[in-house]
Length: 86
Image (cartoon, rainbow, N blue to C red; front, side, top):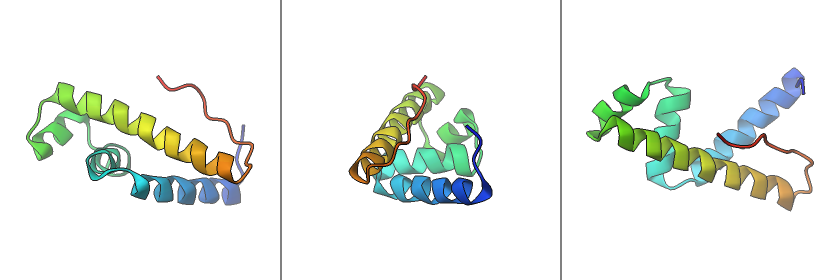
């Protein structure tokens, strides 16, 4: 699926709003990983936790984000489908 510039911007706004609905622990790792482009070791260093713990948090945060997005889209009757999570 190729998105137009408008659709891409709309999706970006949707994702940003959904991120803000996440619990702080998930929100912070999502922001550090995908918006600040930090790798898992850098995030671990910032948070003072193990790299493995960051990997678990990122995985759980992505699942939570996906759930929020799908729920928001379903509530509005939007036909978006996300690919299966890894």
